[in-house]
Image 1 (cartoon, one colour):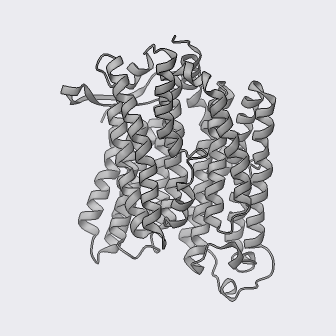
Image 2 (spheres, rainbow, N blue to C red):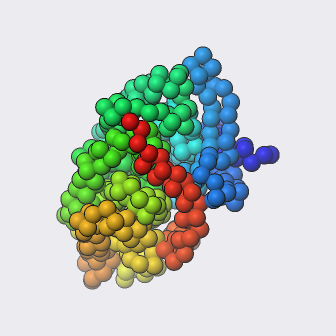
Length: 493
């Protein structure tokens, strides 16, 4: 096996495992489905580990490249590669897939084979999004990953699952069509070439850059999601099963932000600077306004969903201040958010599995009956608030420093998330966990079992490791981020 095969393995191992789960685990063979899914998820993660161990952080070029003609008549190729920007998202996605499979182990009883297969197939498709270096290959993976998530929400979701699934699908699809139109225009300008790196080398006039930027923006802004195209996310989170919420928050939101770095900034750098005020304004609205919206939520899932929008506003702010601190801070915030939001939704899922309620008012005094759970939930709540020593602090601190280099008021407004984040997260924690046990259902709660303890312990270790020693996370980024900034600062008109 050569190192050049690892990216294909990261895509197709989970996809094939998902198909095997469907073929061999359907019907009354739920134990077979669960073990096959776990083996497939672990194998899918193990094949991504060499991407980190063999990655050369000194290189800004694409590594682990694979190239094969796919549709030669239209110059479309199966071209894969990763750099320091995309590396961590392939690893994060494969890691989260294991957690989702374990989280569903004793919980999902309705068609578990189909449920687990959908997550495995989606995991492979998402890795394809982060590894694709051909625009049509990227678009294919980008659209295909919608289908498993649509099925997960639509079949295993809550009472309004069909509405939420359709809203999620239509919002994302509409933006994607504009992205496809931009790709076709760039294909013609690049001499009938769909290579993303060929798009980066184009010199387009400002007006064309603005149109391309806006077409791509519509697709990626919905995915992030940025204000005001964010309304699908709270509905999707509330109706999705726990695993769906974990993947939505931890992985799929990152695809939109990743798209800005891979497409908008290097292809249309002049338009990015021209529209930076617009992008920063939308980002700050998400940080401040959506943080206030989160403060008044009565549903735990909806509160964490709104907090995700606020945190992703921090990410896009970091990208559009055009300095290394901002961009690396945004990337670190994305990785941290994957750990923290995934953990928060798993904690809410633990409570929901026992009481079948997500309403904050239905709880109170949980620490009295679930002390181990309360300790983990406290750590993740603190990380969601940006407590120093946790992963949630690192990205926010760097983005704030990057914003300060650009404009004091950007940093001032961005820093309000530390206040609002603590307010809505800790107020929710206080109402759910502390106080007297006033509800008989809470009195009867049992603490987390070994499976749940292992899940939360792994995430707690990741949150603390990144917060205390972020260097292994930042080292692979430096060369690629510096190259991106050079591309973005290079005038193309």
